[in-house]
Amino acid sequence: GKIASGNPSVAWVNHFQHKDKHLMYLGGETVSAAYSKDFKKWTKAKTGVSGEKLWGAVNTAAGILLLVDRSKSVPNGTNLRIEGFLFRHDNPSEVAWSGESMLFEEHFEGTAMPFGAVSLGEEIRLYWLDQNTELHTVKIPQPFHSPMQVGISALTKAHHVNPVLSPKPHHWESVATFNPAALYDGEKVHLLYRAIGSNNMSSVGYATSEDGLTFDERLNYPIYHARTPSEGVETLPWQ
Image 1 (tube, rainbow, N blue to C red):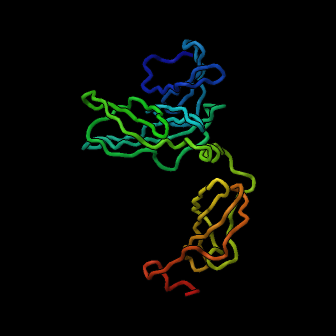
Image 2: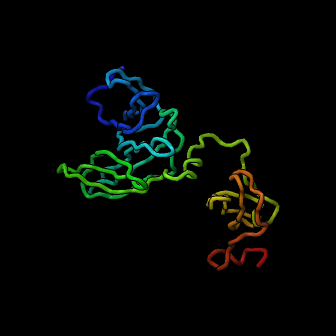
Image 3: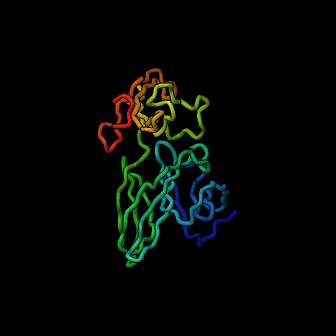
């Protein structure tokens, strides 16, 4: 196929080739990945991601991070909003990760036209032009630069052992266990999680795992529970 010369939104992927082919992403109702060996003939594949306007694409250790512009014009300027989608190196049209929130949000007093992005070590630089064609830039953290982040981010399917943590008969976590936060110290995964008990109060539990899937150590008491009247301390059965 051919790439229309007037395509309003193109994101090139520098320093990367897929099966000896150059790669770029095309904005549209559905974003397409486009491949070419000679920059003349192109093969396109739909990604399933919607995005009329693309801010740019950067090659990271975990995959190709596509930055999609979700900005909105408001009476006093532009609410800059950028959403990220990570595509697989071995299949650049397949999403390996997408965040639950924007990678970047900030109000800008003026119009903003995306002008690209570059990856610089642990930072990503975003560029845009205002209504006077003046160039602006801001830096955001590079979300995929460590091996542990690569391992977690590349998971695209739920593991067969799910759920890895379930409620237990303890009164403080008998109803639900969710909202986990994990820290890897190089040897173990330390997990803090929210638990709800039979009194509908929330507490924080703690568990550890060697592989991040099997939690062989799990405390039978919460490491944090309500301690003040504003937290509902008077409703706790053990007070």
